[in-house]
Image 1 (cartoon, one colour):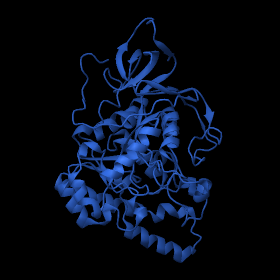
Image 2 (image 1 turned 60 degrees about the vertical axis):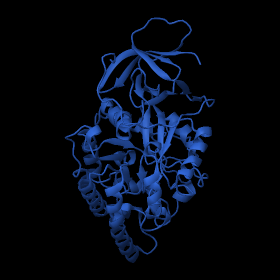
Image 3 (image 1 turned 30 degrees about the horizontal axis):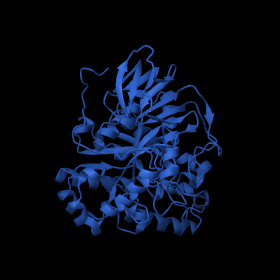
Image 4 (image 1 turned 90 degrees about the vertical axis):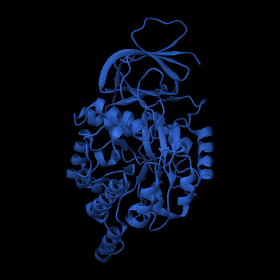
Length: 457
């Protein structure tokens, strides 16, 4: 492929926004500065647009293998690319659950032939594969997790199995990423709701059934275990103000032993939206109150919460339109996560520099992803060019998820993803895809730089 130069965009990187050119050769960023015309280079005119590091979504459920009627690695990575997401880390609740090295190889093989974005995977953890975990090279996986495995049966969430949690936390040197809700409290709340409403439980009850108490008790317990054993713990999809108070911001992310994420839907929706959107916004943990939403955003801004992800989890529209007890939890989000966060930038509730910290930089630092997540010479050229002043409306003609729907359907965003570059290749440009080159597997190391070198802007 020909070398590429992106001219005069506003680059957002490492806390700064500045206008410059970027030279890309092969799959890497070669230089950043101000350059004249360079013969035999392809040129992208970035004037008036913002250039960000590609978004790294560390929490997705792409449904491949086994649940591909909902979504697959090809369809969901294509939607991700259109949304500026250049790398993803996929959860283990496929069929079969991804619990062994061989199952990881199967998923990686699928991705190598079908993913337009860079990819990696979590290894699922339960009492049944503990011995396999200890023998696995931790540099081959992003982390271990129980997320989504509760769909396979009760007792698969670590937080509801304190004896196994104690054993795992005392022995593992991997990042342990957990779904934190107390099943006993949820079951009690469901029983009370059925007693009151029968099988006609209103969706508005979801935030009370999967309650603040269920989240807080579980998260508090996990943090205490992690502190006791100095475990590297990552709490997935925080949903309450009370949980956010449990986290600290006195250390840089590279020195934290306990970290957390918040998902787009918990920053965007609140319980008042159930009346209009119904089970389309049924997620676990549940979307809660306006107060919780505001407190999560505050914790994101003051660095108690470390990263933003999506928990992208497509289901068919027919599945989501079932009654409360039978509608599955989760929804599609990767195509719209960046533009949703840019809307918050427009509302001045977060800065674009902080957005880049939470969706690119910190994701790379937290999971120690090799040479991605920053705009630096020598790093992979994973980039997204956005126009902050281009309105468009989400509709069935531009939704790319295999499931064909979005909780944002009908919403007008004021920013647009123009171009997405993966490993130096223009994979998406103004609605047109280049599917000739697949993404690369992410690699992990312990040597990601946290300070600028002399030759960086």
